[in-house]
Image 1 (cartoon, rainbow, N blue to C red):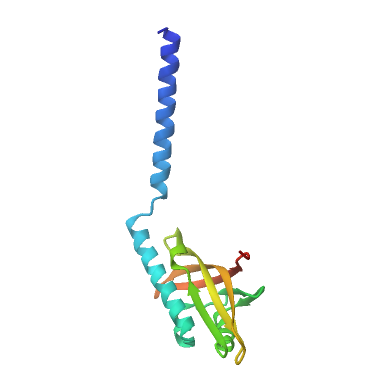
Image 2 (image 1 turned 90 degrees about the vertical axis):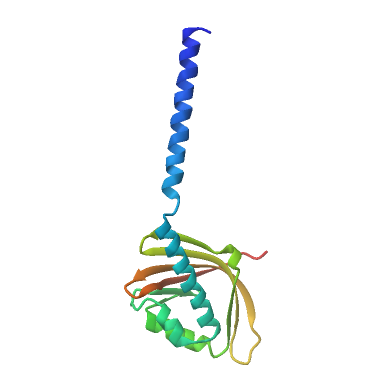
Length: 166
């Protein structure tokens, strides 16, 4: 083997090692730390409480889970609802009819954006109907942002996106 071939092989080995080491370091930096996994469990628990409160039409329980801020945002039927109080009024009206959430828990994804913020994604089917009217089932790709507050995690935004028809 010539010296030039030997140098070329060694150079390729060094490059391969550097690329592999970089990839391993990058993957390690994206692995959630134990505290983040604990936070994911807390976020999941709050989301489950949110669904339970919604399905029970329990306005007080929903209120306790929403961020108490005028910056709270819920997009519903293409219309922004700003502020927790406005959202609670809208939920109260919807609860007069059929309002039921059926999340596909196998599709739940929680992305920790920081130690104090998380993004939730989950496919979910809503049964929605005015009082005395048959409910319509509509599938959404639910997105929520939760923030950590001094009293625990709270829903900061609710952004349901209609799922494409199958």
